[in-house]
Image 1 (spheres, rainbow, N blue to C red):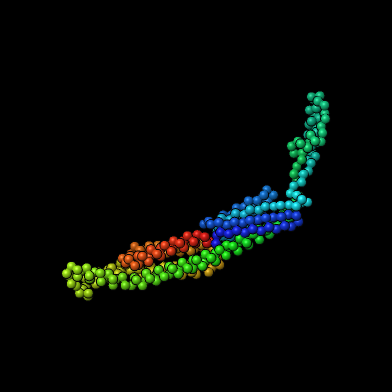
Image 2: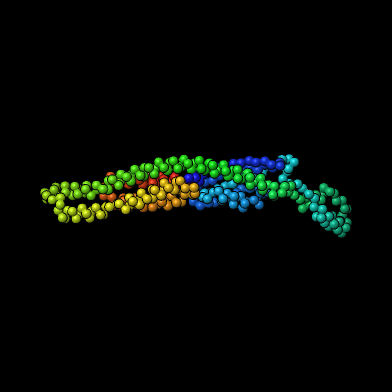
Length: 291
């Protein structure tokens, strides 16, 4: 069982380049991955998303990447674009000839003109891509470890709550067997209170009790609830994303316990069913944190 929330950070340095990667994950029904990278790493965005999606299947994942370079490995160098500069000189000479303005063009004047000085990247994409990938993998391992650790705690909590559901269900099951008998006793007391003594084997009385027993019978609901709980317990040990699966099973459990409540003609069963629903809602909230 894996939690949807976690954090991973990694920092690696090679050949004068330092890469820092932080990955955070949050609750979300589907999978959404986004990256915040410096301009010189933007080309790597899609590759990083693919890398993350190989390990994470649900949640909102946000990656932040930073790059720092040593003084002898600066990110940018400058170069003079001679063809542009020569074009400026030619045009300025033409203007000077036509306007009779004295031609005193200095190098300082030229380097300030647009596109004469251009920036040139000093490192190749392959070099920084390899380091970025290794750093991301390291941060991703830390993130997954944290998600697994938190997932184990969620698993323990879920196990305790499942036991409470089973206790409630066991009580409901045992009580359901004596509900018709209680109804029979109450019915006989009411009849006797009207000074209308009646034989317990009276055909009409037996028919009334049989109709009541059939109307409040919850055997099928209890059987299905037991099956659903078993599915949850089995799912907790699977090595795959189980959040959506358990969420669906919880919806089915909710329907079954609501049916029991609607059939309830016994206060003890109704009270235990309410307790079951309360615990089930806590499980539903908790499972939203599971991948």
